[in-house]
Image (cartoon, rainbow, N blue to C red; front, side, top):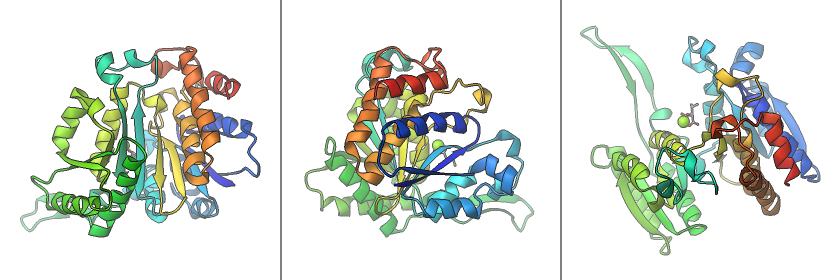
Length: 347
Ligand code: IPM
Ligand code: MG
């Protein structure tokens, strides 16, 4: 059970440190953790945000536990050298095409959202975001037109097989939950979305128990705030999923609690908190490590089928929250280490 641990930038090393302590506290046989450099930290050391040695480590492991990347002081670099390229490169190189971002309100935390507590309390949804295609990975550039004007362009496209495989991920996820799948697109304007919708409908024939619906992305943004309890599983493209998953996290009220999985075909996956590197609080021991700890639980479940151990971690986090352990993101004062200790004590 060889797991790559890529801490990255900002609060990454602090939150990863606690998730590693939690994993070690479970006493799993054969657990081996291999560290590697990513993001701005890797750029400073090796001149690249995703050096070849890091990719080699990733390929030699069964899963990756990932902290965060991002460093404003490197934003002047060419795009391919910026910290974010570490996570984009891993997604591309390792075929991590399915991003699972669950959002649920933990009991007792209903007051933390900016929505009305009774609206937020109903949130229990999963965003399944396609991660290998779309405008993110299309041809892009800034060119000069014949009349001398500069033009920026990023081509959006989805091939049918790309849509089909994420459709299957969405339908399977819905089968394991409330059996409702909402596909989010912009088919009233985009041909890419029309194909997306057609393929979703084709694949739905294989999942007669799942109720498929479609929603335009602008309406989905509105519905997420108006009545988020209506959603079970949402499946959408890379760009729309990026935006809607941040929105969903804020509906829950606590970006410091949300974990995510980025899965390849098979059992390989990368697991990371959905929050960023939070440079403003980095190195101060203030960051809430719960999202990373919950990402470690997803890792055990999806890449190693260790359901019991995953549930132990999740129950310990819930218990710590119920007992009033709160990081700064939740209006409390518990530090990174203290929260790690509190979770470990409740395993
Ligand atoms: C995310 C992030 C990334 C993305 C960035 C860091 C490239 O926002 O994982 O949602 O846009 O996918
Ligand atoms: Mg994002």
